[in-house]
Structures are given as structure tokens and as C-alpha cells.
Image (cartoon, rainbow, N blue to C red; front, top):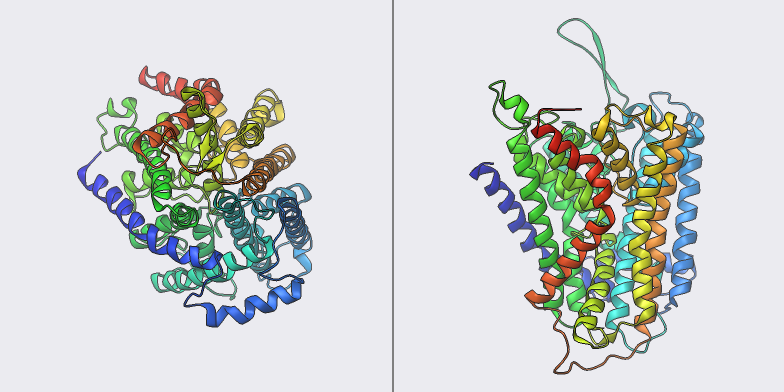
Length: 567
């Protein structure tokens, strides 16, 4: 590790913290129906969309109606994307003449982008036409991210309201998230990326002749617009197979910094939105502090492991850390930082290959996802995942002091705790059961590039990434097979909707409760003590659930590496 590396990491953290309050204040006005600088532009369009949909910003929904609207909308998006892929060969804007996508791969991709996962078992520039990239993948990047934000806002209303029967309107929340948050910022980011050198064109691929006289086809396309939303919406799906390691997606250190900030910006700002909506910004800063502790710990371990490298390589007289799978443009510090950011959020974009990380360096991205990506997390998804852990933490605190647990004046009772545990436990269900089946299935094992614990880590990482709706991969796994396409797709659906439904049920339950005034015995939830308790609960739950699987994979691989054995 170097001082320069840590300076870059701290600069990133400092800029991110400075963005939290102004962006949080803006989003608070948006979702409270307040006037913003964009209201004169988007206000008439917003009201027109409501008339078309047959709804109104004054019309609110019970949590069951909210959930039904969400599920039907996502089902429609899944079907549209699936058939766009299957019919791609006969559709326009296909300059490379790409044919129909295989049914299993089309199912996987439709589930992936609809759930904000963006797992890619294909090379974007060699599989998807311009039309599918724009009308299918990019559209889902917007609406899946907007869906996550809407759920977070609905859950926040559950804590902020008292004796209410509704938690908002899904159509209104999703429309506002798209029009006022995602779309305008992505327009600005797209123009900035074009200025930095990222292509944005509908022209055909370019043929070039190399110095050796060989013919090379250079893929182009509407790249900048997809990069903007894939980062801001924590989608992560690359236009190119190499993702953010490709110079047409990530040209230089400045674009790398902007993309890392984009990944965390909305998720971090939602903590401030929470504080404002419940009437106490300190509550939001306490949640962000817990996220920050876990984030910095992960960055420190990952950076240290990659800077230390492999002792077998050092024995050959080669120093400089582990540069395998990394670019000299970014180096070890920014590759480790990017890896932790993209897996702490449900993004999945990569500027280095995680399969080439050391065992301990690769362990941190896996843990980030297994904890539900609550360390800032995806747009909305990480925040409502963190609120599930908060309910467990206050329940544990109540047991310790012998009081009925409370959070922000709301009694946390059996129903809320059961729903929170259901949301938390669905992730290991999808991650571990599919992994257990895959490691004994010959056709599934045949897809891994390495044997031993590293091969196990490749499979574990895949199902962890799918269920956590992350989308990054260990790269050593050949996932484009019927088994992986179907089971990973199922894992994505489980990880998304088996968390969403309990979260909305909790929102409805809390909104209906009266707010109890704070008393002398009320446990303060904006203090360092609560931050420590929350971090402890997250680590303990994750450790108890996933430690056996991690011990078989990256932990034993790290110990073997120290003793001179690699896989």
C-alpha cells in the first residue's frame, strides 16, 4: 500500500460525503412533491403521464396495491426485453446483422436487466444489436433503478407516517425517480462522457487495418448513454464485454472517478432523504456512518491483499503487488477501490477482473454481496436492505434491555421482525443452495476455469452475484450454458422480489402504527453506540450464515497460497 493510493481513496470518500446533503435535499423535494428547478420542464410531462396511466399524484395506494403495480410493471418489462432479444434478427438498428438470442440466454438477460442485476453471459458488442441495447437494456437500466428508489421511498414513508393506510403511489414514485433524478443526471453524464472520448453513435462498426496488415473490426455504438445510467442506476451491464476496463467505456482516471462517484451517489443520498423525511437528519447520518465503517474496512483489506500480492511471485524477485487482471491506467489502489464500490453497491461494473484478485482480495467483494449489498448498496435496494438490518438491530437492543423495541417512535413487533428475517434469509437460500447443487453437477463443474477452492469460489461468486442483484463475475466461470442461464436467472428473481415484498409489507405495517414519543428509556438510534450495534449485527449475521462456504473457498485458498500452493 502507498500513501498516494490512500490519498486517492480518501479524496473519493470526501467528494462523496460532500454530495450527500445537496443531492439528498433535492431528492427529498422531488418525492415530497415539492418544486424543483426542473419542475417547469418536466411538470407538464409528469402530469401527462399520470393522465395516460389513469392515476394522480394525489391518489395513494395500500402496500398490497403498490406491490401489485410493481410486479405487473416488472413482468411487462421482462416480456418486452425477452421478445426483443428473440426477434432481434428481424428488427432495425442491427448493423452487424446479429441473429436471435438463444432462449435460455434471453431468459437470463431479461431477468438480469429487469432485476437491476445486469449479469451478462454474453459479449455485448457481439450479441446485442443497437436496438436491443437501447430500447431493451438501457430502458430497463432506468426503470429497474427507478423501481428500487420507489421501494426505498415507500419504506421510508412507513417510518415517517403515523396511523396511515397508504405508502404512496408506485406510478408516481417511479415516474419522479426517472424524470427528476435518473434522466437529467444521465443527460449531463452522457455529454461529459462524450467529451472525455466515449463513443455515442448509431453508425456501423469500423474496419481498420493494423500495422501488421491484419483486418480489425472496432465495435462502436451508443455507449456513453448506457455507461451513464449503468453507473448512476447501479446496473453495471457493459456495452462491451470488458466493461469499465474497456477504453471506450472508461477512457481515463477522470472518467474512472466520475463512474465510481456515480455508483454511490444516489444510494448515499437516500440516507439523507430518510433523515429529512423522518424529521431528524442525524438518523440518516448514523446509517451512513455504519455503511462507511463497513466500506472502509473492506477497502483496507482488499487494497492490502492486492498490494501484498502472492508470496510465490515475490520469491522470484518480482515486487509491485498483484497486477494480474489490472490495468496500469488505474493500478492496484483504484482497482481495489472500484471492486469494493461495485460490490458494496448492486452495480457489477468492473475495471479489473475479480478472478485475478488474490484469495483475500476476492473475498471482500463476495462478502459485500452476501451481506445484501447494504454498504450504500444499489439505488434504493441497498437502503431498504439496511433498514431490514436496522429492525433486527433494534430488536436485539430491546431484548438486551428488556423493553419492546422501538425505532423512530414505532414499536417493532413480531410481524416486522419476521418480515425482516424473511427478506434477509432469502439471499442465502438462493446463493448457497444453487452453489451446493452446482459443485456436484458435472456439467456445471465443467464450466469453471480452475480447480480446488478457487473453482468453488467462481461458482459461489456467480450465485452470490445473481441473488444479490450485482451482476459482476469472477470471469473464470463459463456461464453461458442452459444450467447457469436458468438457475442464475431464478436466483436473480428470488434475490429481488423475495426482498421487495417483505419490505413493502413492513412499510404498510409501520405506516399504520401510531408514533410513540421518546421516553427516558428509549434507545437512541443516532448515536455511535447504535452505529456499533448495527455494524455488529450485520457482520455477525453474515458471518454465521456464510462463513462455512467462505472457509471452503477463498479462506482455504488464502492459507494454501501462503504455504506455496495455487490453483
